[in-house]
Length: 355
Image 1 (tube, rainbow, N blue to C red):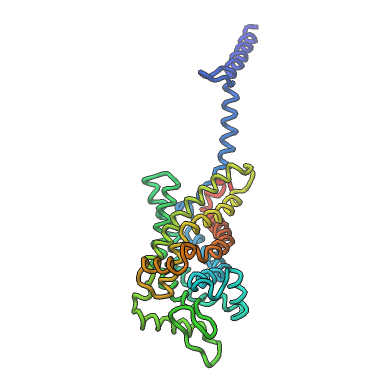
Image 2 (image 1 turned 60 degrees about the horizontal axis):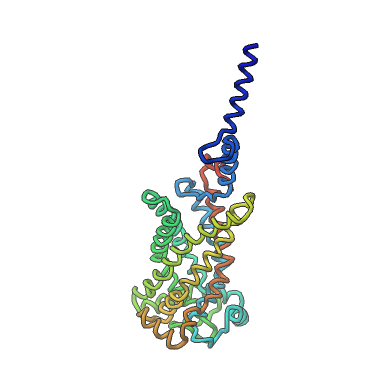
C-alpha cells in the first residue's frame, strides 16, 4: 500500500516538473525542450553546410573537376567570343547586340566561327584547377583567424583570382586576338595570314602566327598586356561573387520549404551572384578587353577615350552578353562544383551530411 502511494507521488511530481515555468516564461518546460529538439532538426535541414577542403578526397576532386570544367567551357565559349567582339567594336559598327552578333558570325563563319581561339583557351583548364585549389586552401587558412563565412569567401575569392589571372592572361591575350579574326578583315591589331593549302591545320597555324606577331610587336611583355586591368576586373568580381552567392543561398533557404534540396538554392543563387558581380565590374572588363586587343598601354587613357567616344553607356557594352553567358554557365558551374564536392567527399563523412 505504501509502495503504491509512493509511485503515485512520484508520478505527480514528474507531471508538475513538466509544467514548471522558467522565470518570466509561461511555456511548459517539457514543451520547450520538445520545441528545441524539433527546431534543431529544422535548422539542420535549412542550414546549407559548406564542404571545406579537409573534407574532400583530392584525387576524385581533380579528376572530376577537369572533366566538368571542359564541358562548361564548350557550352559558354560562343558567348565569351561575342562579348569580346561587342566590347572591342567602335559603337555599333558591326553588331547591334548579342543576338545580332550571334546570327552574323554564324552566317559568315559557321559554327566554327563561334569557337575561334577555343583550342588555345582550353589551356586555361590549368588556371581553373589552380583557382579552386587556392580558393579552398585560403578558406582553410582564413578560418584560423575568422569564422565569418563572408570574410572567408571575400579573401579566398580575391586570392584565387590573383593566382588564376597570372596564368590566364597570356592565354587570354592570344585567344582574344584569334576571336577577332573575321573573313577578309580584322577587328584587332593583328591579322593572321591565309592558309592556301586548306583548312587542316588552320587552327594551330593561326595560333603560331598570332604568337609570332605579338612577340615581334611587343616582346614577352605583350603576353601580359592588360594584366593590371585583368586583376582590377577579376579580383573584385571573384571577391564579390562568393559572398553574394552564399548570401543569396542563405536567404533562399529561409524562404523555401525545408524539404527543398539545397542544390536548388545554390543553382538560383549562382546566377544572381554572377549578375550582381557583372554589373559592378563590367566597366573595368570593357577597359581590360580594349587594352589587351587594341594594344593600349594606359588604363586611364583607355577610359578617357571610351568616355569621349561613347559616353558612360560605353562602360556597359557587352553586359547583356556577359549576363546571358553567365546565367546558364553559372548554373552549370554551381551545380557542377557543388556536386563535384559532394562526389569527392570522404566516404566516412557522406552519411553525416544533409543535402
